[in-house]
Amino acid sequence: MPDQRRGVLFGIAAYAMWGLFPLYWPLLKPSGALEILAHRMAWSLVAVVAVLAVRRHWSWFRELIRQPGKLGLLALAAVLVSVNWGTYIYAVNSNHVVESALGYFINPLVSILFGVLLLRERLRPLQWAAVGLGTLAVLVLTIDYGRLPWIALVLAVSFGVYGLVKKKANVGAAESLTVETLVLLAPALAYLVYLEKAGQSTFGHEGAGHALLLAGAGVVTAVPLLCFTASAIRVPLSTIGLLQYIAPVLQFLCGVLIAKETMPTSRWIGFSIVWLALAVFTYDSFRTARAARIAIRANILNQPERSTT
Image (cartoon, rainbow, N blue to C red; front, side):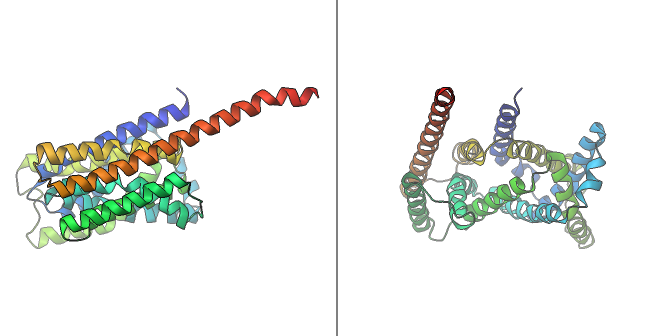
């Protein structure tokens, strides 16, 4: 299978699993968001080390520790993904599934802004239109919620930067996740020990099933992260931007159809504007990609003619 096609399949798998997470986190109650996050960090390391052990792949570590730049990027990625996951778990378990879906809907628009602000990219007119519509949607939803939709904004910004950092680091999926979890292991274990000593830990105190579900949080979050990293290093960011619609669509459906969150008319209007912005963004992406392919073909067809003259 071509490497790029494999990357697309990895991306689809990652975003589909992320989209169904609102069904998993409520099962971990009465654990709080920080306790769940700490267990996710600890048990993710167990899962990824098991993957590396099966592959008998350890030589990468010696090479990676000689590259402080990449280690720094992976440490930053660890912090970003922790902020993202902590916010997401809190959102789901506090009945803000729809708002969390909004964060991942506007993530492509945030990525466009990063391109302008960080990479000094020039936006095409339709891209500016998409960003303008996204901004309008945030304003409408701010009025609807009576507050800035901070959950959505934190999720969008943290994951957008996470994707950029992982792309820049360009380290294998299992390898990068191992470093990320190692960076976070000490604070995670310290927090779990604190909860146990303070009598606030739920692990082992809510039955064996609950303990297994908490431990499973590491596995169910490690697998899509592995798939995402495997996708991010194989396909362009524009493709990642299109694939990531899978997760918020599933999250939105979970929030509306399963969690039965209220959706007043003003909220539907705000989400409709977001979807219109994404439609404009997607159309522009496909149109630009098609024009580039036509230009490449024309260049290839004209090349023999130049060589004969």
